[in-house]
Length: 372
Image 1: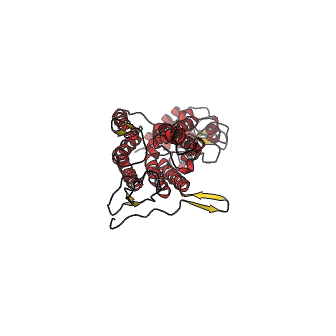
Image 2: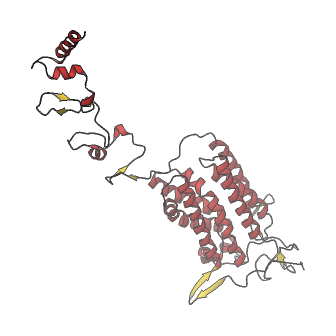
């Protein structure tokens, strides 16, 4: 017997009247909520509109659940449709009993997000980079559902953190009481991966799906060695479990995409957040140049005289004019009367009909005569 061990829960289902409350389902739901909250904060920090990740989750969650279950049933079909299947075929639909393949959940969930992104005109790669750390955290939380179900544990161990499993559970070894807590190993790995993704994304300004590719690569590395500890029934190919081969293939694909995406330099669309005009007249696109202003902007800038004029901008000197009291001529309002020169004063008193230049010459000549 080991000196210490981790006890398993005595039950994973509680009843609220006739309604069963399942710990496995609660862990999945909690993981989704945390992932959406993290994704929303990261999306707003990137300049996207609030509520975008919530709306995309409406697409991703149902697609992901269906994909995860399909992957599990397809790869472990013998559990439901084999000649000695321990489960009835109808139980293939019982998601609450456990059995969600992460590869199917991510693949079909991504398809759902793609549909949502098309409707909003935003980049799928930008969304993928944004939600990648949250997905890792959601997996870390969701793995605790396996703990409550006493499933997907590893081989027997005498380590102090060995997990106690009831002897009647599938996969147990006669005479052994504690097993590797693979759910805990993966949960810790996923949390560490999330921190690495956040740090790397900021440190190296990763874009164009490279954070998501790093998530896939990091997760598959951890999943490969954790999968090797498990003793539940699985298909084997050349001595490796099916999920280990899947991890190898996805690792190579993720690294290849990470290298390829590093050559991309284009902008990724995160949508446009409308801003209200100063008087609330309408929405103004900040990327819309002033020389292409729409009719709302022009109408708001028009002056009282009915002419288009930028609001708050003074009329250029020499363009605006005021009539003199007697309509004698145009007066420049920018030219103070106390700074008028002698020529202008003399010209104002000159012969009617004389030009301003002639009046100025005459006044200068008279001034010369008066000098001693």
